[in-house]
Image (spheres, rainbow, N blue to C red):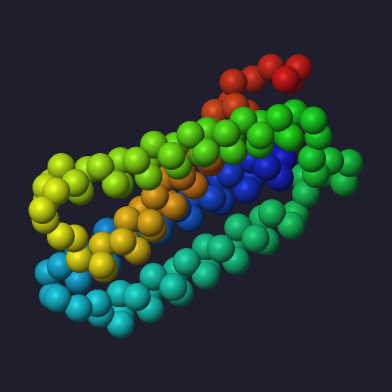
Length: 144
C-alpha cells in the first residue's frame, strides 16, 4: 500500500468518525437543547488519537525503495479531485434547492443550519475523494 492509499484510508476513517460523532453531537443538541462538554471533549480526544496513529502509519514506509508519488498516483489524484468537484457542485445545488422545497419560498431557515450544511457537504466531498482514490487503486492493472 503506497502513501496515497494510506492517506485515502486515513481520510475515509476520519470522515466516517466525524460523521458518526456529528450525528451524536447534533442528536444531543436536538434532544437536550444544548451541546454537552463531555461529548465534545470525547470527540476531540478520540479524533486526535486516531489522527496521531494514522500519522505514525503514514511516516513508516513498507520498503526503503518505495516511491512517494509516481505518474499513476498523479492520474488517480487528478481523477479523484475531478469527482470531488462534480460532487461539490451537485451537493451545493442540493443544499440550496432542498430547503427551498421543504420550507417554501416564503419560509425562513435559521442561521445555525448553514454551518451544519457546509460541514455536511465537506464530509461528503471528502468521502467521495477517498472512495474515488480507493476504487481506482482497487481496479487493478498497473499500466494506468
